[in-house]
Image 1 (tube, rainbow, N blue to C red):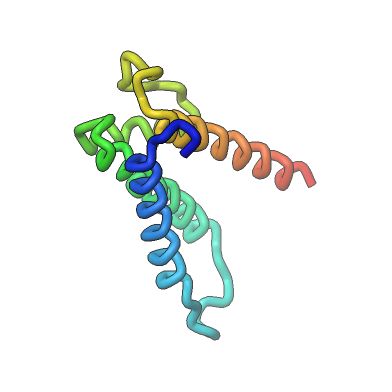
Image 2: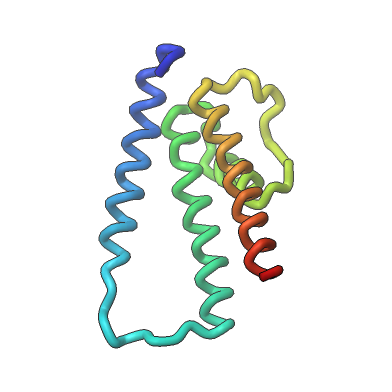
Length: 123
């Protein structure tokens, strides 16, 4: 918002609000139904969680028009969340500041998640 990118900021805020509302609706728990989570269910939950995060994370790139094709935006977001460093963008600096922040945030959040998992496994 500092740079006057109000239309781009609005797209990111609306996408975040939709994701928050969907997450709240899907997180209602049924008491007594599931008591234990086994390894197979844990792996499935993490894999599906990363894929769903990547799908919803690609939406702002497409809505802003900075990455016009959804599959390209999905690749960019998955590469951010997995910290592979791959990119389909030839000129990253041409993105808006909000999109640059989102692109950096996906990589940064993945790094923190890996560090947290490393810390938890060493305890």
